[in-house]
Length: 310
Image (cartoon, rainbow, N blue to C red; front, top):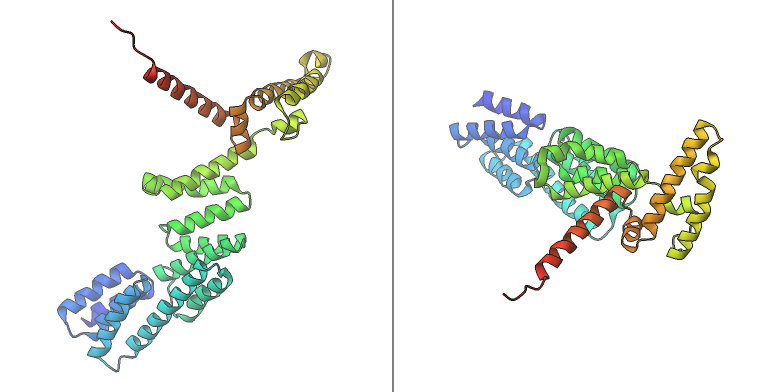
């Protein structure tokens, strides 16, 4: 039993609680009165975030060995973490994010040793990153979410914080790339990740799309008539015939500008397309939604078409 307990302590010390729990359970089965087995198992439950079960096991360890210093210290830490976590989460709930940051950090500072691979360590960094995000401290949100994910890449909240912080910093491509890995692993089982990835991709496409209003020199509130008038003026300036004697570079630039003007006037003079563009959709996305709306209209027309009498 002593060798098993020694191995369990070593695993727990590295934050590898799953194996440590198995070893401690083995020791408990071999000797139901082994206080150290209860102590190690209680520490594992505590580091896994189950404070109630951890405290219960640690109290049993002290019942078996009232002088067990390790169990006394661990039980005190367990109670401290349980109370402080509750207080930090209340702070987040009541939007006192600065206080929550301090409380999460207090757990990380005061609970020693807290292995970086333990769930509690990663959980504190993950929830702290969320509080930083709400404070718009995006660099700190990235730092602490990265710390959590370095040891536990299955923490969905940390991935979501990371994506939101990158998005707030307008690093949308990084956000989309960051979420691609966990999304490929978990797929449709994580709808929040799927939605966050879709939003990041949307933002990338939005950033890359041409600004049709700027190309036309049009205010965003311009009427359809005003947009058509501005189009005619700009089209005369960029018509390929005007640049037939120019350099190849000038002709290509004019052709591209003329093409984009055509796209712009088509989108901005159609109420449905313009609404989608103003929401942030690019041309490909607009065309997809137009096609879907047309298909839906055809289905509805077929469904309600009156039948003739035979």
